[in-house]
Image (cartoon, rainbow, N blue to C red; front, side, top):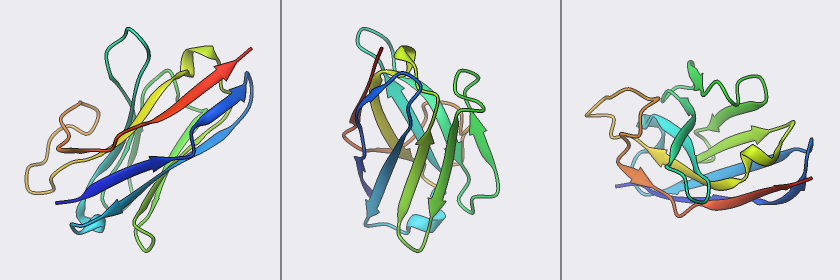
Length: 125
């Protein structure tokens, strides 16, 4: 079973950039499809980006396409989310998640099996 821990959140000005990291322990990291999600205050959790186990395919929510980039380094057991051109609508608690490779489901859904605790991103004007 994999455990996930996010880092890299913080306060950034509109138009700025930030890189989130998600470090894994336990399990076999390179087997897991991974995703980033976010939940703004008073709103439901939503999909942000996902990446296949080998990194060959990536998926993005329309709201972040062209501004965010998901990547992974399987040698470092780490998932990344590079965020640029941030705006107030990006303010949220950001989570990383892993999907059980033995039970494949749509990577753009919320159907992930292991979740981190989240890291806060706040974009100020």
